Image 1 (spheres, helix red, strand yellow):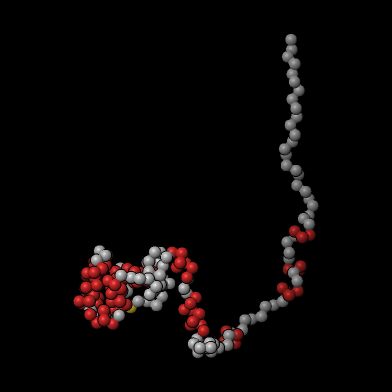
Image 2: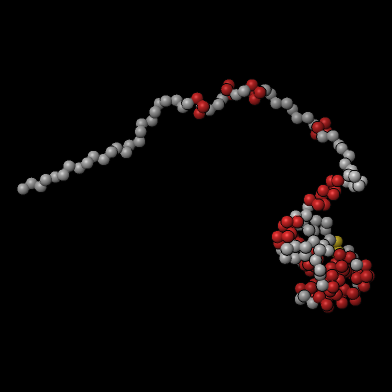
Length: 185
C-alpha cells in the first residue's frame, strides 16, 4: 500500500517588495540653492569693529550711592538653597568653639585667604562644614601662603595640633607664639 501524502501548504513569499521608481514627494526633496528664499542668498555684511558696537557706559549708581553691579556680584555668588541643603554655614553664621575661633582668627590674621575661597572647591568640601572649619582645614593642608616667615615657622606645629584635633593646645600655642594676632581678632 502506498502511503497517502498530505499536501503541504505553500508558505507566503517573504521576499521584499521590489523598489519603486517613483520620485519622493516634493516636500522630501533636498533643497538646493535655487529654492531658498531671497534673503538667504544675499551677501552677508562684514561685522563692525567692537569699538563701534559697544559704547562704554559708566556704572549705574543706586539710590544709596553704591555700585549696583558690585552689589549684584556679591549676592549672586551665594547659593543659599544649596548651602541649606548641604548644611553649610557662611562666615559668622555658625557658633564655633572658642578654641577653634582663636585658631581661625590667627589664620586670617597671618595668611592670605583668597577672595574666591567660598566659591572655589579646591579648598575642600562644603558639606556639613562651616566657613571657619574650611579655612582651618585649608591652612592645615598648606593651601594658603603666610604673610611672614614667623607664622610660616609655626605652621608645622600648628598643623600637628589641628590634625590631632587638640583645639585647646592649638589655641594656647597661637596665643603664646603670636599674641598680637590673637589680640587683633
